[in-house]
Figure 1: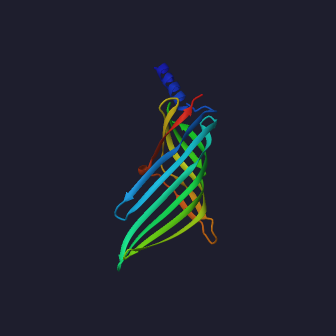
Figure 2: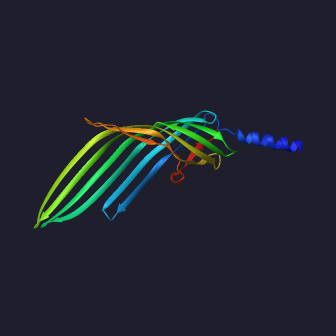
Figure 3: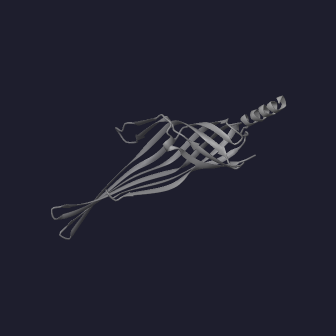
Length: 220
């Protein structure tokens, strides 16, 4: 009986101390496109993002890395109104595009042979541009008049986030990871005279907004 208990303790100790080796490299990231159309107000929202991520374990269960990529969000709203004998059609487009850099540090703690919990400290930065375009077309008795305006401004955004999560190794090369919640701070500012900073704070864990992804590990 004592030998059985000792063997069990050794097995559990070894399981609890499984580590990801120093020098291990992994790749992951975001890649996606979405489009939403609302026929009630003739609007369309498009979103595209590609942010590959590379991580490197500088010590057992401790990785550093960065994500580098591009994001683009576009909102289009169209309206048609009749004013007297004139039919006025308007289209407004708002576009936000940015180059993204997000260095991070991630610490793992072992829960099992293939299951880990981690905490990630991330410093996301965006260097981008806002663009607004408005076009109005008026048709009065067959006479068509079109006017258009456009504005643009560069912006910079910097944040500090902490994300807790779970990572499960399907095999030596592929894992599934999930982050739950986000704790952090973000500030952004338009690069125009008189513009003020916009600050956002995020604190909390939300099971309804779990982020799930996969990553590839270059096992040693």
